[in-house]
Image 1: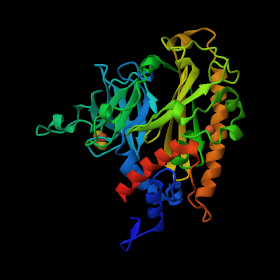
Image 2: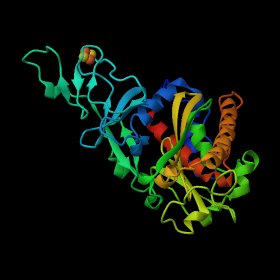
Image 3: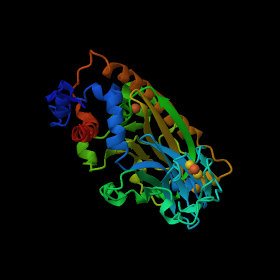
Image 4: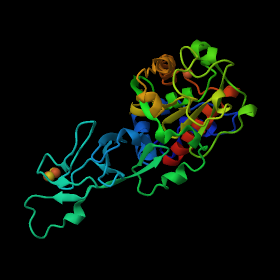
Amino acid sequence: MAIEGGQQLPWVAHLERTRGPFAEARTLPGEVYGSDQILQLEQRGLFAREWLCVGREADFPAPGDWFLRDVAGDSVIVMRGRDGEIRAFYNVCRHRGSRLLDEPRGQGLARIVCPYHAWSYQLDGSLQQAPRMGPGFCKEEHGLVPVRSGLHEGFIFLNLDPQAQPLERYLADLPDLTRFRMPQLRRGRRIEYEVRANWKLICENYSECYHCSLAHPQLTRISEQISRDERGQDIGACFNGGPMKLRDGIETMSMSGRSNLPTIPGLSLEDCRYVHYYVIYPNMLLSPHPDYVLVHTAWPLAPDRTRVECEWLVTAEALAAKDFDPSDVVEFWDVTNRQDWALCERAQAGVTSRGYRPGPYQSSEDCVHIFDRWYAERLLELL
Ligand code: FES
Ligand SMILES: [Fe+2]
């Protein structure tokens, strides 16, 4: 698509430069932030082929609990079966293709009945009844089309690509985060944002704190960046990231710097000094804190629009407490998020201008470069 008459367009050459060595690399070309064609390519080549975090197992505890998720333009049903297994299916009837479910989520579903001609499906996707289809019809051949799903640390992942590597292999080099007991954590709060910026700008912005002292005075007061030498290499095939240190006397990332939530049981004193930030490609941003885990997922709606879903996961003990009040931590990150979205929107306006030229990375922006390099390599494969 981007190759016209066999000639590489200049922006493809910029992609090559982005994936070059850090010192000489330049940021991504503007075309990747503003083009419908590129977004379609990303939907087909990235979002329809990579493992994507779509929700939390704990939010769908009982058989018949379900939710819908749009992935790369397709509606997918994620559903817990009578056997307790979570499965995913295209939201498409096997008769004449009608959309089956419309609401975003629900509970206690006994079966799925197609609104068109009343074919009905069991919770494991098998076809239960197809009225008056006659004796030659084979029900077994007309179950819902499955979508691959998997669980990691309590998160539900989907992959539309039947050929994709298994989830465990995809996430194999992610640091061991079991000490944060994420499968046991519960959703304390959820906020959805619509940001007028490309989804990659959100991942890039998350990957650096070069902007923090100017944009986030409340964050800078309570946490500090640490050098690459101190934090070591936190980079793998599916992720990059690193920790920031809480300043002396600070307990967690909150407006007050204090924590009124129980610490995640079993964390070491050392763990309680840090907040970790991981970008798990393509669109999951995961931040374990001493007393909660913050997770964002960024879903492209248009080249210049992204829905960001943000959840604060807390211990079950915290959620059950009569005086549970996460407002100190929710407000902290809500304020910080909004500061970040404003920066992303400002960047969106600039990177899609004729006046934009890919720029150099500052030394603390190594994770932005790693994300951009991952993206540039994927996109070059797709062109
Ligand atoms: S399209 Fe679903 S039953 Fe006909
Ligand atoms: Fe920020």
